[in-house]
Length: 244
Image 1: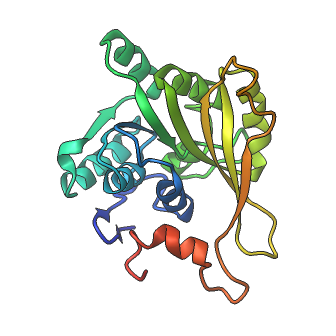
Image 2: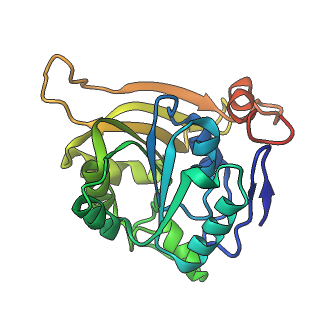
């Protein structure tokens, strides 16, 4: 479904994963102020990439495997004010890793990703939606390996996952060279338990004085009890949603 933001327009063109509140929150929350070279893994229709170019002066590379999503992404990029800073790679992130390393290109100082998160279970009859939501084509181990390979030594990666997927992700993270640096728990309101988690990753440090046993953790509420957006949410989306 088409969605118009303050500075750009997204048309999903039949993409498996349409514009979502999760994606908007991640795109607005990710710490991008110092980023110069950003990678968007699984770009879909290009939402996170477009938000990243609006929020920074970085060059953004977007990787998308699906034909339909890549076509939509390219059209959305071309129609945006930042087409010259956006590059779409129509391939899997695993193949992108191989070619990127072979080309001796620079690593990325920020990686952003709203990854597939369901492992097994009943899948949507819509093939594109099932591919976007399930880990069949990109499981957590492969995702973390790609991030570790492509992220610069001092770089940061920003992701979002539902609560039911965090346990599996943390098991894979423990076996990777990456670690949490911040986790933000998301609740619909103060009466609801967290259902999504924003988090940042970095390369695991070997300096024991710098190692953190627990990452910085905070809490984010989307709505007040009366259904209005919280001040936190309004501040986050004010540069993007037309009403705010």
